[in-house]
Length: 213
Image (spheres, rainbow, N blue to C red):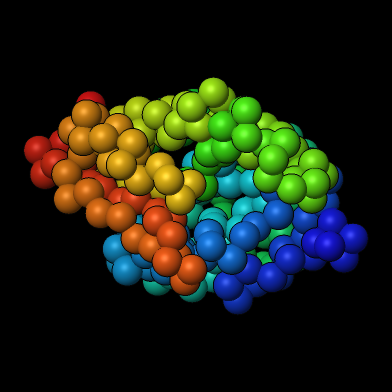
């Protein structure tokens, strides 16, 4: 339906969407709520895999003078993000990038990501509507954790000491993502549930002595 209408509401903004970009889900708003709790005036935030720009633009809209950047490997998705930012009049740095390559050497107070987390063998059973969306924005690989592992590694080198990483997860992935974060040296790991009571986000911060990796 969002593709037919060409729009999808997310938090306080309305985003243009269409073929080539993932439709933002209400569950992802939990990441924005958590990020707003953790950030202060002028903090530097990176949205890893920004897609339509939903998370980045919501944070720019609601945050306290946050300096928000979004990276996205898909050129088609990045066009939607740029269009949305311009239409909404929100200042967000949007970069085409494979992971954090385009921001290498820069540091952020918070990294937030809604990475693909569907297992390759599960996509066909999840409903025909997903067939309209780009598979690479949904499917992570055989285990469903491949992209989470990539984001954790990227964030470990991109975050300031004590910086936070927030990740959306599949409802059965909490324990595995907690383990990924612990193995990478992150601390204060926590899991939050969505309104349906499902595990939906995991957050953790780097140690006070520096990046986790």
